[in-house]
Length: 99
Image 1 (cartoon, helix red, strand yellow):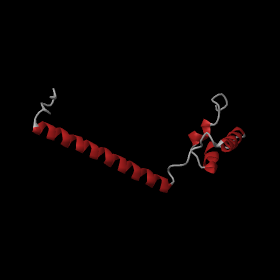
Image 2 (cartoon, rainbow, N blue to C red; image 1 turned 45 degrees about the vertical axis):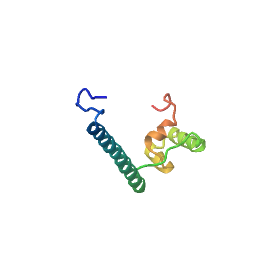
Image 3 (cartoon, rainbow, N blue to C red; image 1 turned 180 degrees about the vertical axis):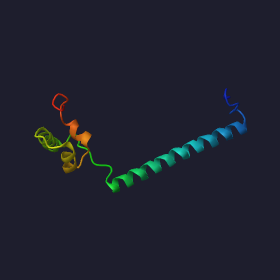
Image 4 (spheres, rainbow, N blue to C red; image 1 turned 30 degrees about the vertical axis):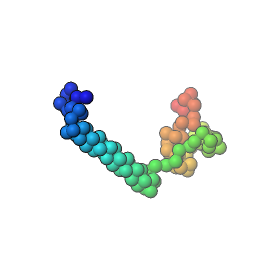
């Protein structure tokens, strides 16, 4: 097989070597990206920048969130008391009642 744009012929020993080196470098870069991403997420969690989200199973908390927002409590206060983001709080309201 021969690359049309790079003149790399994988039919030769040097072409196969080059292909394997490039593939190894790409694999290493992908693993480094994953490591950096995981490390960044861990730091963000430790600093409290990432809050937990309300899950579908967390119906009671969703009901509390709806009641508080419907009664006029500011979304920022509701969100901080429930430990979720403001957009997550608004996801519990139907579009027709949110605005």
